[in-house]
Length: 112
Length: 112
Image (cartoon, rainbow over all chains, first blue to last red; front, side, top):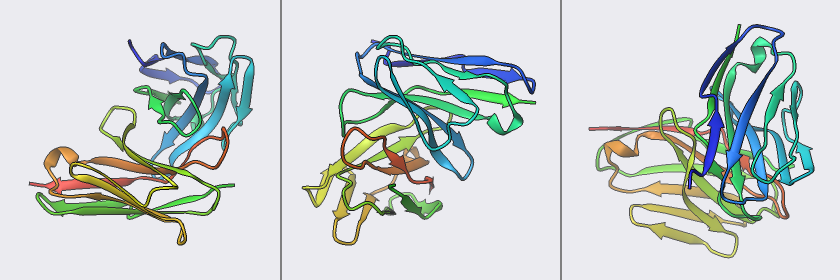
């Protein structure tokens, strides 16, 4: 039981490049979400999904796309990376309302 | 929407002393209040949570109190140890299947 797996752990991009951050979970959780963590800003929600085929925007969605075709996977896409997207990205899941979030170990992204 | 304020942003204590971190929330409908601990290079992990029908909850050296009238909740760590050094986040969950809203975090340093 791996829990929440995020890949890659580290990534360096040039401005304008695209990439996909992967998140996979083996706990059969319906709810999945993406946060970014910046110094002094805490954890800010980017996008979330309450089940396969359903996605919604969080606090800071601009510049990011998501899709949820399966229960297990929730990829985060950057279509044209910008230096402002330099951050640590966390995927988090839970099995029902008001239950604990389970976090992956993060992807550290640098955009130059 | 919900807004969570967390204080202090940094806290240093001597080993063996107690540490207290305080959070306030704005949405009186919020009913779930978890606390997460984040160690360097890892994702946040749940350490304790409390629901709105309970005023206090304790787990060994960690306790959380909730004052619904004042809309604030606090984390208390007694007999602090160096391994308690980490970043701590509070969060609040509005009603329904809505995402957690996090405070900006407190960096706790326990000095041996």
